[in-house]
Image (cartoon, one colour):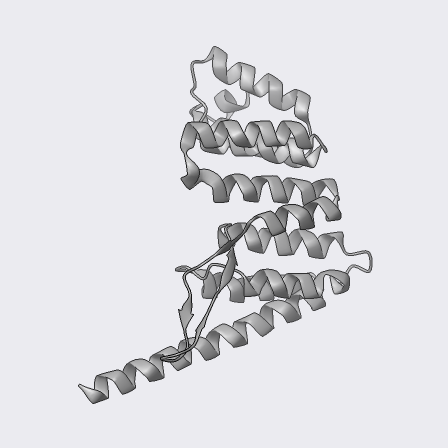
Length: 220
């Protein structure tokens, strides 16, 4: 056994890593065998185990099964697991190559944030994708790889829309910069341009926030 050869502890994280590899290969039968092996060793599955199954079901075009697995995961882990469940389903659909289904799922993941105040009278609603930004960057990467021309041109506008709707939590800007470099290195120039454009936009926003903060401090 590989875990014995490498002196690895066969815990849930170990098996999840193997399950994700098999999911990327769309090997549903081997995943089933792995889950049975986990059960025989008394290893209790966690959310990541279920995410790999959702991803694999979507990747093999088993949309109904993916929905059933997603609902079960939500029942077990609560609504807080929804962003991770959605991202697994959406990314699996991309691996399957079903772009129409992907777009539909992406729209279903849009949610409304609190209204943003621009002035004393004006408010604007902001919508964002209820998906972790790590998953969004993976989605953009998969879109670039799906490109017929190999440069990401046909999905450039969609990539821009995804980035505009991202949740910019801690670490987003640093990851954004790294992703732009990765796309350039692999010659996905159109998706790289979308990432660079977002980098510039976020930098302007951060600069504006810093200036506003300095002005606010100056008035005290």
